[in-house]
Length: 107
Image (tube, rainbow, N blue to C red; front, side, top):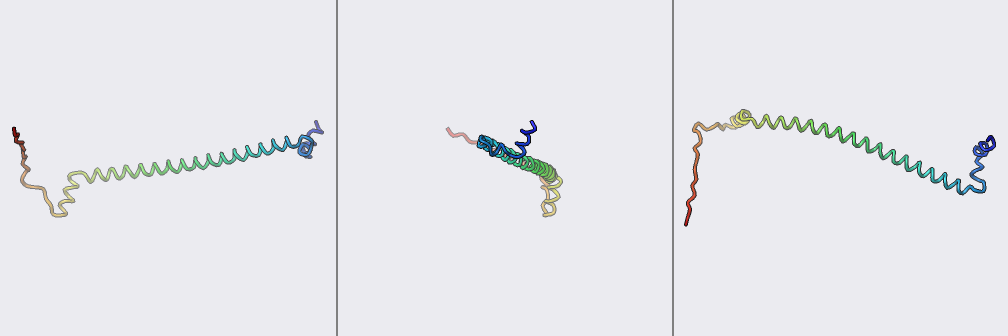
């Protein structure tokens, strides 16, 4: 047991007769570790991107609500009347008359 640990610490498994098999395993394990680290970084980047987009959605929703309330206020008849009066246009004193159109049928 003690000899096996010392052989590992000295690196004899890398230069012994079946060393190519050990080297292939080490290269494979290194490749998998590199892929795992890259995948982790990619996932973290996407998480940060999602958080930023969620924040932007909240801001845009808030802006939408503000603009919608402004538009509703501007659509009120009293607001329209005030804006039109500033341009010296006033409502008609005479109420509108309804016009009926009848079509003439030709035989």
